[in-house]
Image 1 (tube, one colour):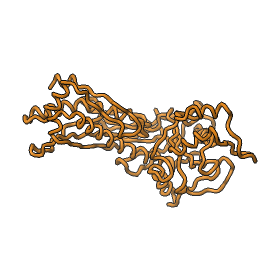
Image 2 (cartoon, rainbow, N blue to C red):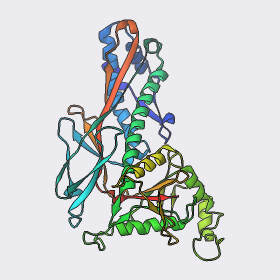
Image 3 (cartoon, helix red, strand yellow):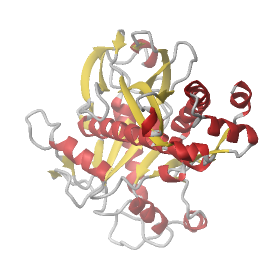
Image 4 (cartoon, rainbow, N blue to C red):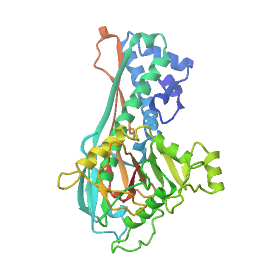
Length: 400
């Protein structure tokens, strides 16, 4: 088994936003065929040794899949710690020395649970809670005895998908809740679009201005480091991307009596020639099917805004920000949220535990719960992590 373990190789055949398209494949080499067959051996020691050998190699591969998938969970900066330690973060190293004395920190105690915020001094050590994300899968021994590498590969692919799905739900819940509650210098972080149901250049421009207003120094003035434009990425729905593509042929003005003024020829040509829209106005576009009216991340924001007001009522957001309207109203079921994020600052942290012996983030072991007459081979995988948002000024929102 040692030679087979040493020569076994896995490759990532695809790594796309859709989990179902991301798969791990095992090359059909003599060593790997030998290893897979040995997993179904009638000799329990040989079978267990082969199953353990495969787990020791696939574990780091699964960690790589989870850490490199282009999902909202990987917008958090990874911070490794030893699994035997009591993890903490020195907050003063993540904030400017002239920042305010007390900051709001968002965290979760259980995966998918309701995020909570606490106020802590910026010159303190933050202790945080971690939780375990796990998955257990099994397949019939006859697939191993017949060298069905495709079945083994799809089993581990499914395990990675399940962990990623749990991370997505946990991350989205934290981001949407923090955004709905976020207020800096008496200003909400969420504004409304200039025109109902449309996303225009004016809206993105207003988000840049909003970012400047909430990212001030501790005295309320201009920060020393300027902190860029305040937005590096925006999380949008397919409908918003459709709106961006439409700027190539639709009017874009929001002021004046003439309502059919188009963009410049160079801007419309650039949008028309790059229909994929990887970025817009220097901001990276991240498109998610979970965003949009009636979709689950939009519903998470809706629920968070309903329960975030201090008096128990729904949070109201300003209408028609670009045109100077003053009427506030709650988010409607026909409206959707667009999320702006500043990834240039390490304010969204994912602390992940590593094994004290192997240093791996993802623990994969052979599941020994099955008896011989069940004719099954199982694996149990898990990782321990904790997520925090230590500065909600990196989040901005636009209701369209």
